[in-house]
Length: 271
Length: 273
Image (cartoon, rainbow over all chains, first blue to last red; front, side):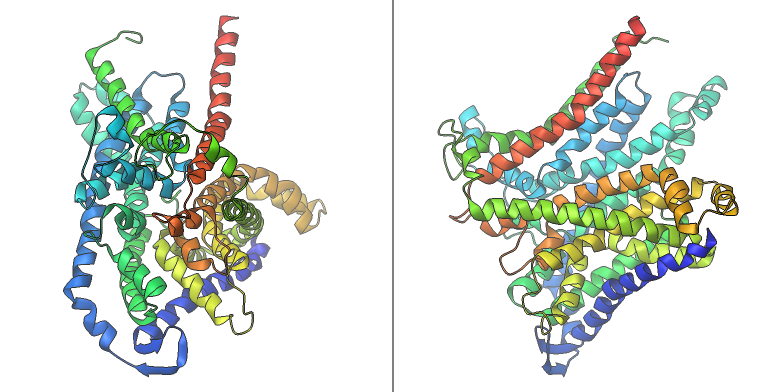
């Protein structure tokens, strides 16, 4: 089948056009002062990169890191035990249970955010059942919504790994008189670390770069880097600053990809 | 084995699962309540109505956005599945070093921030505006969706190609079958599970996409998510969006869960026989 090599060429060209060229365009734009994409009046400028250390942007980066980081940890603390309980249970229909946990993803993500927004305001439909929250603009609201949004992405890979795992290692460990706790930390956890790793990637990356959750639940007080980039591209049409901040995000993610490729050369962790 | 013994730990485990399921389904329940709430703002519950369900079919901008969502997702899935399978076969045929490099490139749209993917496609397509003035809309959405879904198809197909016995293909061509016919008759049927799971993933991601479509829609053509986003908190938002989403969720729940329970029942039946 080696002769089918050439079938990869159109795809490589396609990836170059859509990955590499926009990247170069962003590099050029970040060193310019231009009117959106109009290069006729553009001037060379270092101002964009100089303003990177402005506290507004540093705060936004820190917020993204903090909110996505806490959300990812909460997702591990809920998702992993959940996958572990289901995979070690004697239920007949484990897969159906996993499907039940994954299915909320099929409901529109924006409407799910709005559902939380609706009940996090003091006056809401849950007043009818005697409840009222005032959580808009708090870290809690943003993290809570982020966790419910991305938890299925932690459950799926950790469950897959735990279910595929060769259970005879665990049984051998029990037979040799090793305690349950020690067996878990010495065998099950290391053997399922790949699933946790892909769960972390699938939760942390979208959670740190999204903007819809903070836009609706942040009440203008919590700003993540996604909100700022969105603002530059869609509202103030400052492509130069937007490109500069996007490049910083890309560099951070590239670092993560390179790190990942050291562990996983065939890209099997992702799906 | 102590299979049917009810212990404290098993109750706690069950309770834990139940609480998680409850929290994950709470937004869906709220969306449903909002879809039958007669108050337009959705801030108080004023009574039950099915008016919003009727409005799905009368609100033109809403149903056009729903049609766009499905049209883009279906066409992007078909294109990604078809071209992605051939690209995967090509990548699989490369030498180890080249293959690793291409897979790294292929991972970029998967791992990259959605916002960056959206902006990348927006920039590339903006360069074409001088040539095609009304380019933004359906075609830019389609390009963007094929771009971010194809890597998933490729990542689903490559492991299946790795499992495939290369002798099978060689034997077929040795018997005088033309290469592409061998591909079609031998290779594709052996990797079809990978193609199907990749396509399902592609469709799921495409139909619900918000961020990437946000940057690549234009000229009045948007998908369902973006229809909602631009109307939030405005007067032209309508609870018909909740109604449509509730209908879709119920249909999907039925499609996925009914066969599961049926399978379980038939298993039980065969066991009792």
